[in-house]
Each structure stands twice: as C-alpha cells, then as structure tokens.
Length: 140
Image (cartoon, rainbow, N blue to C red; front, top):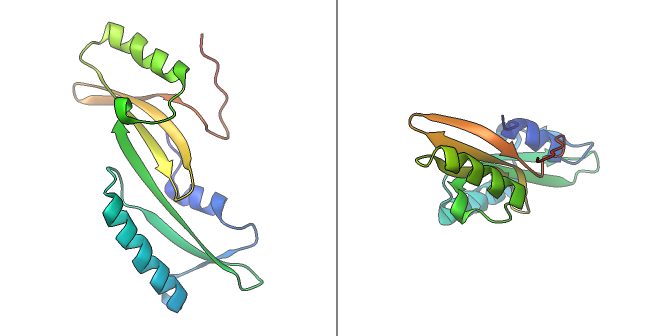
C-alpha cells in the first residue's frame, strides 16, 4: 500500500524545519501557493488532490513540498522496469481482460513510490513496487 502523502512530505522537509500553517503565511507563501495551484491546473494530471506544505528552518529559510498521487495506464508510464512489465505480462496471460496502471507520488523534482496496479472487474490490487526506499525486490 502506498505511503501517505503527509508522511512523504514530512520525510522530504529540511531536517530541522517546522511546518508553517496557513494562518502563519506571509506574502512568499501566498505567492508560491498561488503559483503552484496554477501549475497544477495546467498539468491536469489524473490523480488525487495535491498536498502542499510550507516549512521554515531555525535560520529563517523557507521551503515547500508539493506532492500528488498520479495514476496513469501502464502503456503511458515512463521508466517502468522490465521486471514490472514482465509481471504485468504474466498476469495478462492468465487474465486477458485485466487492465494495468501505475500510481506514483510525484513532486516537482522526482517520482516516489511507483506501484503497479492490476484491475479486473470491480477489483484492483497493488501487485508490484519499485524505487521504494524501504523496499527490496527480487523477481523470479
């Protein structure tokens, strides 16, 4: 099961930073929030609502994290390893009507936690993961 966006945001924040709550926003946070929301609308990615968090270090440096779960068909996903494609082909051989998608947590800079999802009828299952920091995989 994918990690939560909230958990990922805290893991990506600067080590000694504290979260800036909306009631504490200054002009920079408001301007960045407006810019990020416009970019998100322009990207029009299929998936969940993005999570945007702002942070401040003890040295008064300000940062943000912007994360969004994005889901796309396997055929359109990029950088899918061969072992994942092989798993999808193996499942498709047994369930020809199954569909496959990739769900991944994206920031502006990179992709985290990509998962292969197989759907058949009304059911969907997470069947493979890669590039997960706390996960090791061996494919036989």
